[in-house]
Length: 406
Image (tube, rainbow, N blue to C red; front, side, top):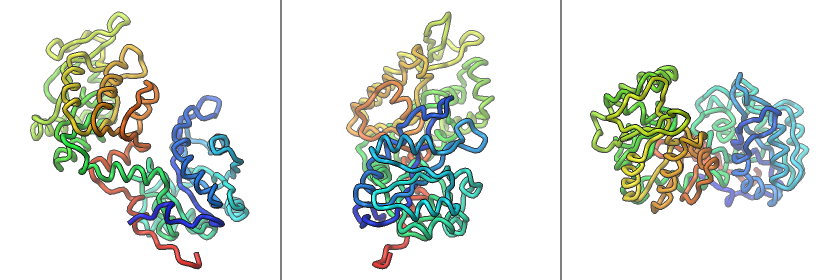
């Protein structure tokens, strides 16, 4: 049983709150998108309004990446969203960081530095070992309790996610609470269930397809995007050199064999695109599978009208639709059609769930809404949608209880 904020006596309590505000960064160093920060406003506002002393922990980017930076822009934007001052300290567990946390008054908030500036946080540990890291051993003594609201990172087993709840009384924030309510009960959603797997993260999608088909969670799997292209090649379709070279360059060539094995095992439950859209003379041009390969230099950028009609019928008959990944290069106006229309059709299902990550970005870009649930997580959502456990959630389940002296 996971404790929530409803179980926490907040007033006067110093709360370490792990959030996931990992965001795209603009060239001028500001946030290019604050959607992930907005997701945590409910949790942070509630803790502060109830008199909590809040220390925010988060990561940003990956070492060596363009978005690997400090969290000062995040602190500034959180202050605007929360409508109150938010302090920022450029350290996570140093003496300065611990002093900043210790000096918080009721209703105060401080954002600590990017946890990934420290090598241990970029590694994965068993919870007991994570509890022995420098971050946990030095930061835990200035915290009374821990709240995890970082669902998007819950599939990781890093110190700030599994180490702190090993040594501190711990609670799920409102984001994680909502995600678990929806995604943790996928087996109870209305049938038939249709999974729409697209985008460019082919290995993840193939893993999901295997899992949901083996476990009987999916009645049908519809393939789109680069995932659909891989399945078409696995089925013997010649997509031409441009699409094939892209798949090879991404290191996905072995996924074709895995897709072929899936088709052998569950081909009657896997739907493949019936046509694709390419760019020809500057405009969208659709080709049926039987008309492939395309001309030299042309790539499959979207699904076409025949596929949309076919997939639309399957989605309309579904009780639950789970969407993960766009159908094509939705950022290009010529190739947004497949993604927009599939998403629009899915909103009519009794239960419609969006798996987060690139899919949620596509929704915001296209302005499509009306879903039952849009997850804040990518990898974490995928795990839950295949009925797998998440290390950070398991850590919350096993966290010590708060006693009177706490």
